[in-house]
Length: 90
Image (tube, rainbow, N blue to C red; front, side, top):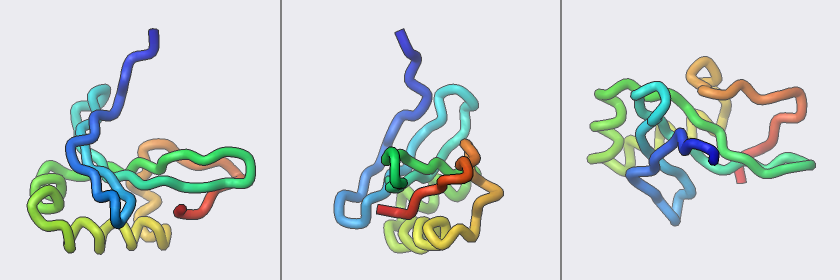
């Protein structure tokens, strides 16, 4: 049986992103769906505890961060590095 790593604590249906807890590493993340030619997947970005708290309380700030991730401005925070066939935000 696979162990669940990510626990979503906040979801914006309208803006298509999640915030949550990384059960494996004990940290926090922001994530959003991505579509590639072969498969759709989710990109996960590490958050500090302060960012997580702030974004959980401030949707606009969270969305601003998510949009900057969608523009690939925070690739250094990716939990899983994408392969050569990286998708685009969906």
